[in-house]
Length: 308
Image (cartoon, rainbow, N blue to C red; front, side, top):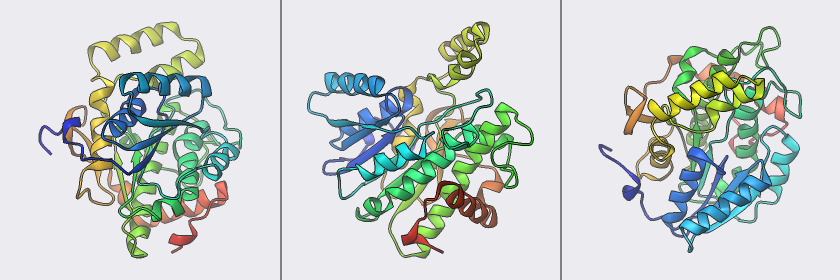
């Protein structure tokens, strides 16, 4: 793992991958590097215009790349179901649950869920469950859930998953990232208990310069805050190319352990991929099972092949 970079990615020829939020930032880099190594990659994007622009950009960089756009809005379960129903391949080797939102003003998804919990966790929970048959049809398939070191700010509140009692944007974000890790933990447990070779792992990019950080200030019309974030991205953050390395490692490296958490080596902030610290509550079996049951109830998506 020391010094691991994109040159170390194994050949991905013959493999099919889906990367959510692949129109920019870490998602785009992840999709590009998987395609560079020979994978057929579906860029799952909310905006058709931005998704098509990303596909065009990727094909310009890699003329031989096998890439295509899939319209996916994780904040709308009807869109998630439509994407899964239209998925054109019988097998799926790599699913990267990457797309997300961060520290937004309070809002709700099309289905009435608090936006950060709804997009970051429930949308990906539903997508993964609906694509589970294709994942199980691919030997050694990987599900990589992109969390954040910010998960350490807060555990989930199973009695207030949608922050209806009190909304604090950073706590809500942290809870959604804890939910990502609990989902990974429970998915890995169920995959092993049912004798499958599906590997569910988590990763995080550290502090990487992407559009994610500016979304909140833009949504609230706070230009000064937006400028500060852009300055921090230029001066402090590592580029998206570096931030994508832990995700690519978790998605491709042989021997990645189920329920592992990979992040940047240096202070969980920057550097080559390495095992990352995670809060103990993200390894709690009972909490993972309670969140799983609540997620099935809220989304209506059940993982029949992995029913406990």
